Image 1 (tube, rainbow, N blue to C red):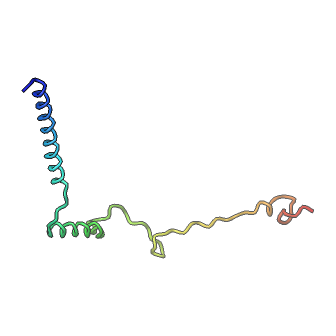
Image 2 (image 1 turned 30 degrees about the horizontal axis):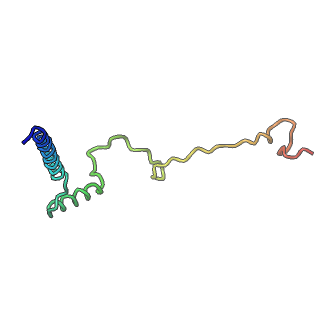
Image 3 (image 1 turned 180 degrees about the vertical axis):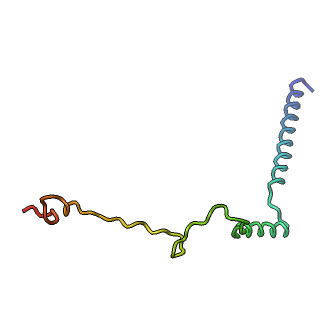
Length: 102
């Protein structure tokens, strides 16, 4: 065996070791993140989905005061009426709508 073949075998051993470590690490990550296949795991997943869709349970007390619902009970307050004034009707010296200039 020559010196150059010893260097090649040393480099090859290092490469094989790195590949083996990468495979072992990849298998570890895959095993950690894989989805469970048991019936119990599927039932637990289903119940988690139901809890996510269920309405929140009633709290012990209101977090803030309830809004005044008024007479209708809908909680929507009507907007105040806005009176519109036609400027042409109230201007001095101009009788009528002001549209006619004849």
